[in-house]
Length: 349
Ligand code: TLP
Image 1 (cartoon, rainbow, N blue to C red):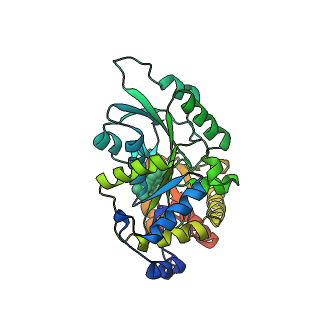
Image 2 (cartoon, rainbow, N blue to C red):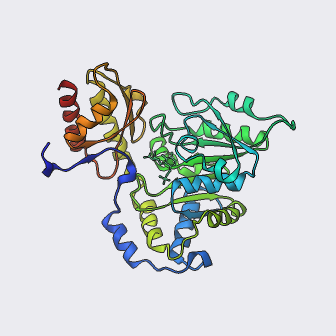
Image 3 (tube, helix red, strand yellow):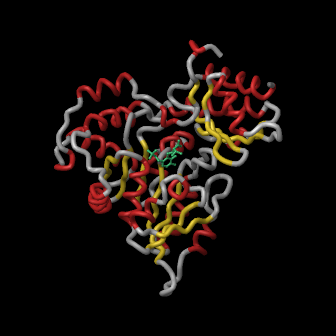
């Protein structure tokens, strides 16, 4: 692949760069000191996010990791327990921040291949009232599910999890870093999908292409407490309207087009399924994440990734035999076809 054709960067949708419209909105954003409650653009973003996510209020935070951390700290105190998937981003990729900083005990239960938790197992994991045990306070779900290949969690499942949580006096948090992808794939509003959730953290800087930021949404009282917790972890931002302006464009301009990323992911999955040595079932590719296995004794996933990188295609091995490719705003159907040619070359070499 010639250098002039450029890099096909499938490492993550986090690599997306702000659109020209975002850049203009950022340059023109009205700003103020948001810690003092003075930034009109942040307030507009928070109102819009609350409405789209179907909650009373929302809070702008710098990252998805902080969105989850602040949410868990707001629901739980020290010694409280959170039930979550053993493959959850919160459990695997966030440095155990809620335990390290908040004293919140994680109780992982296995994720099923489609990313869901078996709700009977969740129910069985809830602690009885006994002085030996931590106090179960929170269930955390992920939608779409990253390590399970961007799988979408259905409205019925989300509602059932919420009903279970309520029945046991627990709260339900959703790591909705890619909730927009889930909603587009299901053809429902994010608000409906999150109806049973007490809180959600949703990213603006992944498929939606904003340069920075996530939003947390929940009840007005939850968000009041979350604002305090954002401050204690150093996430109070001053003239944040400059980045919130891009977030507004992300929510108004960039959600519906995620369907294109899903179509490109499906195109990639179908092409990969044809290649000898690659194992993937395209039917399991529901959004923009494509996880596949390399079933070869004579090549490691890292060697495959290195060979692809030499041909201008970037992606990450994610442990064991598995690799992950992610489609996004800067990836076209032609890029997918070029990436598939690079795969053929490396696998034949
Ligand atoms: N995920 C990143 C990496 O951290 C793995 C990626 O490339 O997919 N929840 C979920 C489900 C996520 O996938 C991510 C980022 C986050 C939270 C954290 O968001 P940031 O990176 O904004 O802290």
